[in-house]
Amino acid sequence: MTAIIHQFAVGADNLGVLIHDPATGATASIDAGDEAPILAALGHKGWRLTDILVTHHHSDHIAALSSLKARFSARVVAPRADLHRIPDVNMAVGEGDHFKVGSFDFVTMETPGHTSGHVSFYSADQKLLFAGDTLFSLGCGRLFEGNASQMWTSLSRLAGLPDDTKLYCGHEYTLSNAKFAIKHDPDNSALRARISEAEALRAKGAFTLPSTIGREKETNPFLRAAEPALAASVGLTGHAPVEVFAALREAKNKS
Image (cartoon, rainbow, N blue to C red):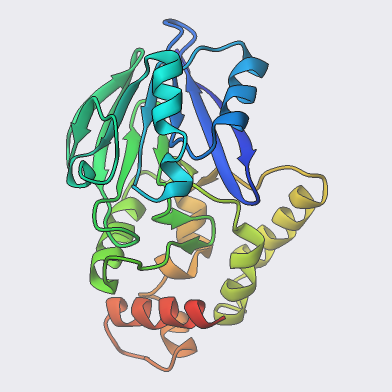
């Protein structure tokens, strides 16, 4: 059985995602930033919320957590490292912990950097990755609590997943990220093609996600820090990839 994924806008640029198992009726929300659009999405699809999978503690990802749990008696799965910052957790998870949404198996990957307790959820059978604010389409999250070494390790682990893994993340940032990416990787023909595709999708109101791990490895500058062209773009030819990554992230902060 294949998971049904429904993606929808939450606020200005957050993305909501529902995962539905037609065999069991189980439905999970990735994070819970705003109750109204999640309820609207559930009503549109005719689904009942059974689970909330929390990637990290930021308010735009958990503001509606308690109210949705109370409304649906949903199970809340959240990072063990953030139990002091995330309310109403039923299942605390960390690296390598497995759980099911209906009949679908997920494994927890600890991906610190954006926050110290950030996790991502991966389903090998469904070829799905929910990366929260760690990995974006053509970008990555800011280092609010972690450091460059932690984030580079997290991104490298995600890049090691199969190329056909579908990537869902917490924000629709592709076009804004594209401006930075093309500045630092101007000769990348795959990147230019992605930008054209993203512009066409946004022009008609469509989302640019999901991406795939394979496409991100070809076009996302933060996954390409080992490439000579990216090192040269920040004046660090011959330096370690983590140093190049740190310089790219700092340049993005200032862009």
